[in-house]
Image (tube, rainbow, N blue to C red; front, side):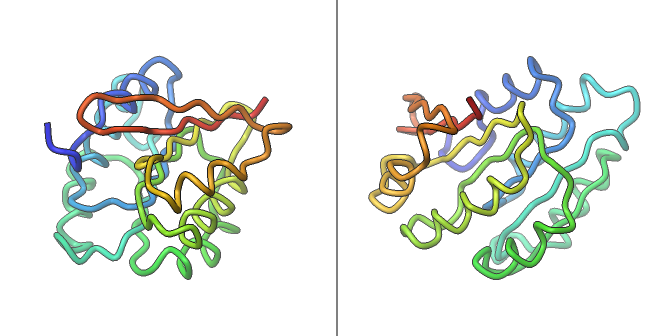
Length: 170
């Protein structure tokens, strides 16, 4: 399985925790978005119950193409195009609390901190934040600075993907 496609551990979490609101920071091709939404639809009475929010430059496949993929699934979705250093802080105040957040965007410390701080604002007590590429220096440093008084931080070793962090509230 390529490193950029769907991530089975996310789908398993969505399935077992009955997640309906999903946010992805770093959408890339949209394959993971489609996979997560399809999984969430398994537990939804109505496709409109499933909400997906995606942030990316959308340079790879284009925002319209990914939008069409999501439209076919019947979910509610919003795509935010641009640098997350700008789009996340601007958009977060208008977004609902999210069940699952997947961060797979910039790897620098500055980008990782910004993505985490904005994701943190969207958490409720049951939210899971998965952080991809936890072994990258900037991401690793951000994870080291997450408050252990407020959050559990577990490093998962995922075959063919390396280290992924799972952050939940205590």
